[in-house]
Image 1: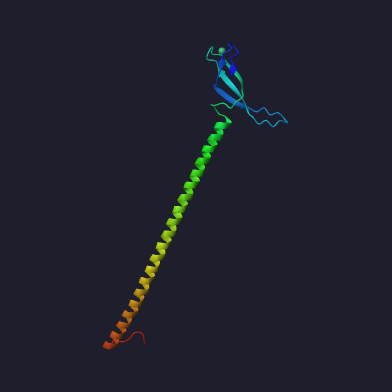
Image 2: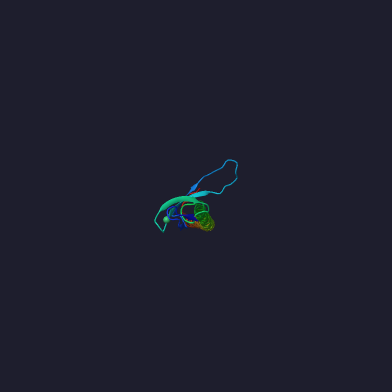
Length: 139
Ligand SMILES: [Zn+2]
C-alpha cells in the first residue's frame, strides 16, 4: 500500500511498473524490485513509489514467463503436428511404394506372359511356313 504524498490517500495499484535491478553484492536475494507509477484517485496527483510484490499488470517477469510458456506450448504442438504429418506421409509413401512394387510385379508378369505368347506365335509361324514350304529366314 502506498500513500499519496499530496493528500495521504492510499493508492492501491500502480498504472505502470518497471523492474529495478538492485543487486546487493554478497546477498542471495533474487527478489526483483519494481518501481510503480501511481495515480491518486483522490487528488489526481501522480507519483512514483517502490513496489514490493510482483505487479499484476504490465510487463513483468511473471507474465513474460507465461507468454514464453505459451510460445513453448505452441512450439511443442507445432512439432507434434509436424511429427504426425511426417508419420502420415511416411506411411503414405511406404503404401505407395508397396503399390508400385505390386504394379511392377504385375507388369513384369504380363511382360513375361506376352514374351512366351510371342515365342509360341513365332513357333507357330515357323511351323506354318514349313508346312507351306515358304523359305525359312532363320537357316
Ligand atoms: Zn492524492
